[in-house]
Picture (spheres, helix red, strand yellow):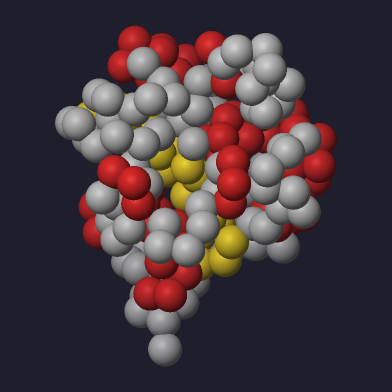
Length: 181
């Protein structure tokens, strides 16, 4: 079972747990975008759709804006071959100032996801409140995992390597992470 790594705004750069995941998981592929700094929903959806169509029953591993992208994808393409999704620290783009670079990405879809999902939420994430994160989990039908005070679950919050993420993703597909050669 393959995992598709779906970064958020700015692409989960070097040292981010998503990029490091690629070094240790032989079955993981990243969904690259043309422009990580000025995301356009339609372009990002197109890239995600192409990656999903090339992958048999993927587990999606999405961070921040990537989690919102997965929800938008599921709303647009409810019939898909996705086995499950790990949605980490979703960005609440609905609460951003109008001049923020992500403000025109689109509203956060609140439709139930047509596949199993886990939403991993930090209590002190600067990009989403606990209340909104709980709402997303409830509306998406996601199992909610409380990460405690984990910031935005990125290198700045001490999550360059994040083994707990492997365990959460493995729960979705019951497929172990296969070490990269």
